Amino acid sequence: MYNKVLIFVIIVIFLVISCDIIDQNHNDPPSSVLFDQEPQVSIVSNTQVLITWDTEENIGGEIKYGTKFDELVNSVPFNTSSDVQYISFDNLLPNTNYFFSLFFNPDDEYLPSDPMSFQTLNIDDLIVTDLANYQPRIISALSGHSAMRDSIFLSDRSSTENRTLTAKFIEEELSAFGFTVKRHNYSGPDYSSIKGTNVYCTIPATVETNDYIVIGAHYDSVVGSPGANDNASGVALVLTITGEVLEMPDRNKNVIIVFFDQEEIGLWGSHYFADSLYESGTEINSAHTVDQIAWDEDGDRAIELALPTKTLEFLYRASNNETIQKSIYIIDARSSDHSSFRRLDIPAIGITEEYRNGDTTPYRHSPEDTYETVNFEYLASSTHLVVYALKVLLSQ
Ligand SMILES: [Zn+2]
Image (cartoon, rainbow, N blue to C red; front, top):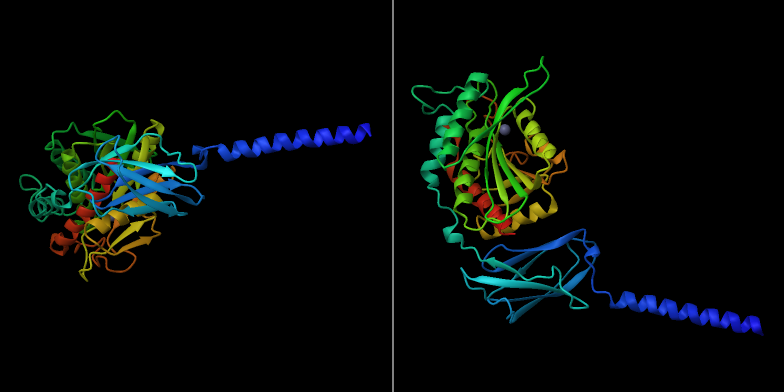
């Protein structure tokens, strides 16, 4: 009898403890442990908000928003098991600050804990650069269509001498934006031909942050090729980005603008540049590299994105929806500078014409890769897309 009472008491104590545990679990708000990556919210247009997070969970709730921090008078529900969701708003006013809060079911605890504010973007004012003059001038000088300086017309950007001239040209173009331009010299083993110079500058964030975005393009070409498409086009695009980023009044990340040497003989410039960032402990949000972005024979403006992370893919897709509405293809191509960053686990994306789909320059790595073959309208449309994507990233 005594034993039975003891067992009964033990069972009761056990039940009480387990109920308590269950109850505690039930009352716990959704913990940030749920997320491998905290949710991020950003406006991608006057009508869309992009939320990204990293979790396997099915998530539902609502977004409350309004023009005053303490008066979030509107709300829209969301429910998704995907890592990325666009939420559309049909009543946002352009050029107005909105405050947003995410509220998650079932406990109405929100993450992150503070509402976030964003300025809506106006596509009409997206680009300030005079693309029609600027990009042709850059590609013309780089590809020997016009003199780079004095009476020097480059036949290619392969020899040490021609690469040195090119680096100097890029340096002067960057300086024109008012920067102190830096050189990153590297060299491989003594017996190798690995020796070169990356040219770069850093556009500081307008807030205190250790976060960096890298955007770059290689400036060298193969022997005997003027390399107008490969890759004067990418250089022109990234130089344009420099001016555009400078125009942004609110930049929540630092931006490193970089021009790589020796891509064509083994991605060496970007290899050593990525190494140096990695070794210095620089926190890189993402690296974006542009290579061959000037051929579009069928006029569909389509673009390929090489091996983007899921977040970067959706960033570009969302930006595309709001700008140029190109077809976007995701490809598995590793033979360009983005690979140098990805190998160090830095989120990276390559941006290129339809290299895999075949609507790509037939003159690659040949003497016919000339200024005349460049499709400037296509280059401009691709520039719009990248500028938009960076604006969204910098607003986060
Ligand atoms: Zn290239």
